[in-house]
View 1 (tube, rainbow, N blue to C red):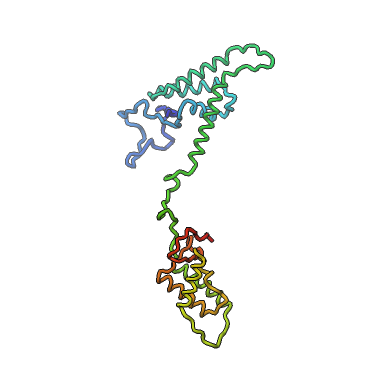
View 2: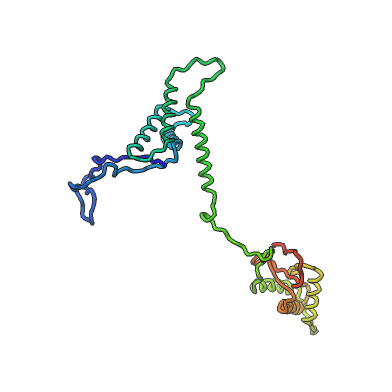
Length: 283
């Protein structure tokens, strides 16, 4: 990569009115020491970086604010040669492509100075700048495409990869937390209270009997069953409570399993001996 070189004349490095040249350990320095040696190329500053001769030409064209389809060859060639000479004067390793481009610019400039032959009606004379313009337009398009690709998010620069643990090729569903189970139970209880009926007689309820009802319901479904579908809101609160206790007893005895697609999603149940590949739909 070759840079745009600016040379600062040592004689122009002067002192501002009333201001010291520098400060050494806090003390002002009004004049340079007589024995101070400054190398001739000590003030060379690299301002711009170019990736090749086309990049340098495109920089000169854009800086001059001219149309790339109508390049003023005399001005462009002069500025290009100034840059190349500045690079060579600074003992920079100059690529052969820059010298080839300089020769090409001089040739185009010379061809444009030659008298143009008469053109037959209907024909157009070939512009010596046509090939250079084509290369510049293609280079600018590729440069813009590279900039757009650089703006695309890249792994380990703009984001990191996340690995998901999968067992035996099946998606590992999140476990049901106690809070999710409690919220689902509260929803069932609120619906049951809306259908509460006051009974004077005492009803004998059996947890084992409700355990059997739940097992039969799960076997008939042969797959996942929504937690809410196991309860009948029209029943009494006591019946709903015993039914919920029966469900907890089955879960404690590992006769059924509970799962959900994601956190705060509906809870699904199935028998532990089920081997169906069906999965609960996300809700």
